[in-house]
Image (tube, rainbow, N blue to C red):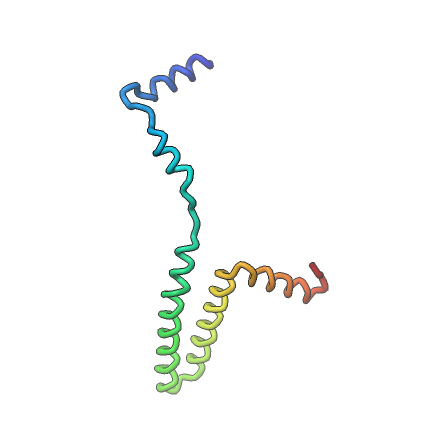
Length: 108
């Protein structure tokens, strides 16, 4: 069984390809992957665009006299922005979780 596995591995590694250079392996191992840049870009660009779109919807709805739609869209938009603010803050989620646990009498 083991000889079959080693034969399969030997056949799958072609001898014509040289081993990777040490620089390529080092580069692949030292690269840090995170979402900090994407998170900062969303906070800097997307949030401002959402606020402008929300303001336009509220103003147009207010001009038409459809106040129930204005409050619905405005409230849901603010709720979404609050959720985005909590999601991008590292300490806000912990604080809100502790507050919710405090409502039922659990202190951490």
